[in-house]
Length: 234
Image (cartoon, rainbow, N blue to C red; front, side):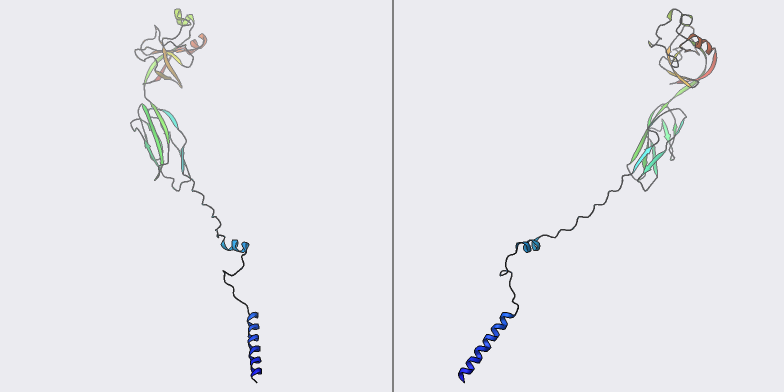
């Protein structure tokens, strides 16, 4: 009997050991076999896809229809501003020298006196601006007697072919002879729609009399004698 019991006990132990071998066994990380590919995938850092950067908002701009302008006293000029990429269309107008020219809130410039000023248009609430340089010419008006002359012997006598009293060569649509005691040499004078320069003098040119230079004797004679209102820029 004892032998039988011992054999039964031995068989029981062997059966239990067989079942233990068939059961799944857990392996610790230290005991697991090394797999380089699996390790690289496990340890690789996870990166996020880059996000597209937002496009910067376009910069507001302002542009005037004129960058510079020459005016006569009492003339007016309408400045127009073109604004882009701005939520506000309000403009602040300013003149650097109101004595020379003023500007209203609509961009209307009025010439006041001789000089130069800068008209600035600024987008309201910003430092974004555009500018126009305005030059104002002052003048006096007077009535004068005008005649024509050329550089021939009939008109200029002994001075035929010579330079003007200013030392320049006379030129049509530019040169006039004046009384330099009334109109200084170098002064600009507007006769009709043409602006001349007082460059010459003459023995017969006294007081309110002006000789207008022409390139030919025929043109000079065709001018005849006229009484005209002129502008003398001062």
